[in-house]
Amino acid sequence: MGSFTREERIMRRVIGLAKRGTGMVSPNPLVGAVLFKDGIRIGEGYHQQFGGPHAEVNAIGSVESPSDLRGSELFVNLEPCSHWGKTPPCTRLIIESGIRKVYIANTDPFPQVNGEGIRQLREAGIEVVTGVMEREGAELNRAFFHAQTHRRPWVTIKVATTLDGRMATRTGDSKWITGELAREDVQWLRFAHDGILTGAGTVRTDNPSLTVRLKGISKQPWRIILDTKAALPLTSQVFSDSWSSRTLWYTSASPDDGRERIPVNEENGKADLAQVMKDLFGRGIHLVLAEAGPTLVSSLIRTGFADELIIYMAPKLTGNGPAFFRADSGMDRLADALVLEPVSSSAAGHDLKLTYRFRRS
Ligand SMILES: NC(=O)c1ccc[n+]([C@@H]2O[C@H](COP(=O)([O-])OP(=O)(O)OC[C@H]3O[C@@H](n4cnc5c(N)ncnc54)[C@H](OP(=O)(O)O)[C@@H]3O)[C@@H](O)[C@H]2O)c1
Image (cartoon, rainbow, N blue to C red):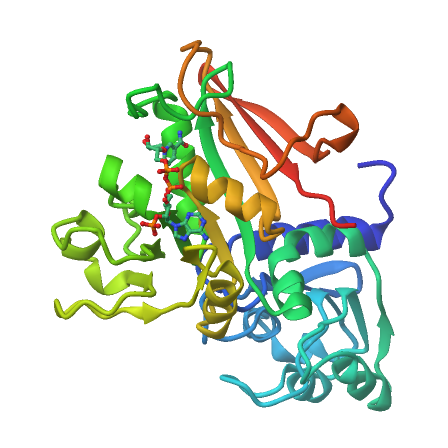
């Protein structure tokens, strides 16, 4: 704690509050806000639900005596919005509340804000300090910033492997490689994402539901299925269970079986990933978790659509079965290897959870 300034300590609290919106606010960013008056915290809040009030509104609304707002300081991790969206502009509320100083971690790249929020506050005579815990704020909302900049979703690949890197045995058996704690962690990962992406191979072999089965959670992510030739049976869980309306089915074929399909072009005989990503972005699906077999996982990595990799590695050796990555052409020398950036490692029961980022050149 000692090495942080007062502003940084408060912004850490703001970021902690923002995280409480995980899984509920996308495609909006995670935002928290704290209000201080004369060194005392008088209010705080966070963006709780997509379409709901912004963090600043909730923080201001939490202040017991509204007169305390005059001359107070607002800490918020993202530049306040300056436009009419699903809610009125936060800048207006801040100005009208009499707040005298605003601390911000990151400017908002959203085209309708992008510095305009800060400009409006300054024009109204409010002191604005930017860049407080900027790196931490950027990390928190990496998917939001990425989607705004690249116009495509942030894709995290999740794989369960043995210690010798296999995703299944030679016969295709992959249930279960990892233990209960790792699988529960995956449930939270699913909850934090807008959509779960998989390929026809996994649906055919495992017939997964790809749903969130956590107590008290009713929100389900989209299931995104790439089935180029529309060869998957209607009886697959993703098409027939009670969440079938939450399945997006991408195919280049046009079968007449009543299923709603999303047409996609073929690229080398498979669904064109660039087109799929563009379509997902257009639907507001900005956080994608790929839970696929080695074929689709390898395609995502080779085409550069993979941003993050999470490996749950079990202390098991099978000595056979596919690894999760197959290169297109020979990576014969180590100098040709893809080098990932390690992010974190932790234990999930007897398994290891390893997180990496793909480096962009
Ligand atoms: N351990 C784990 O974490 C884990 C996770 C999932 C699966 N698995 C295991 O993986 C095995 C299945 O592997 P898999 O490789 O067949 O499954 P997959 O990668 O999930 O599916 C591959 C199929 O997806 C379709 N596809 C459509 N567009 C694609 C594209 N652009 N790139 C790549 N594929 C595309 C293709 O089928 P069409 O041509 O018919 O469209 C392709 O054959 C099973 O044994 C399963 O248990 C393990």
